[in-house]
Image (cartoon, rainbow, N blue to C red; front, top):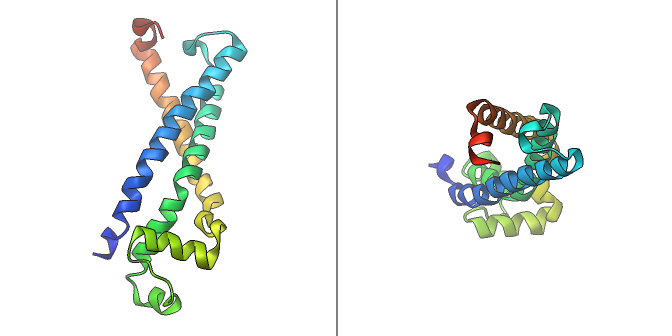
Length: 146
């Protein structure tokens, strides 16, 4: 049951993560389109990769505090963790956020984010680029006039 602890912060984190990823990816592509003066289908691959990388970093930054809360809630079910952090309350999302801010400060909500960027930025970058490339080869850009 300890693995299901932290389900709510995970569910709440999906909305900003996905929304910011897609919104910022499209925004960065539009900036490049204006810069190059061409349509989306003509954007070079490296521009799509860069746009996806920036989008991944922004989405991860926005949702990372909820990821920290989830991990703390899951770890609190282990005895060793409870013994070391007995004064902390990680039973709910709110109490976990409160404990992290009180005892670790606001920067505690972002502990470990730099190492997470190493995973997320390339993953989102490649995912969006592959998706756009498949749309291009499927002829979706020509059909929609996009």
